Length: 85
Image (cartoon, rainbow, N blue to C red; front, top):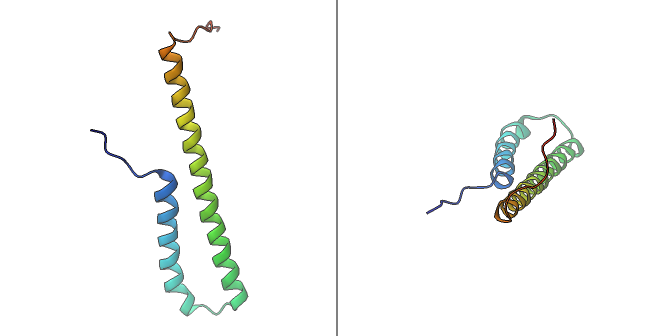
């Protein structure tokens, strides 16, 4: 029986989000930065997390597609392309 593992597109952004929350909770009360700067930093951080999630999700879908294509090739009798050096 195969155990489902947590996908990278889930745990990396989640870990980065938790890290960011801890850092902001520790540093924001001690910060002398203005409100606009703090909001900008939080929004930028959220955009980075969203980009990480999207890119890892896209990478996982591409890897799954490659794996399916490889399985289809092997079922159809192998790759018939000649090997050239």
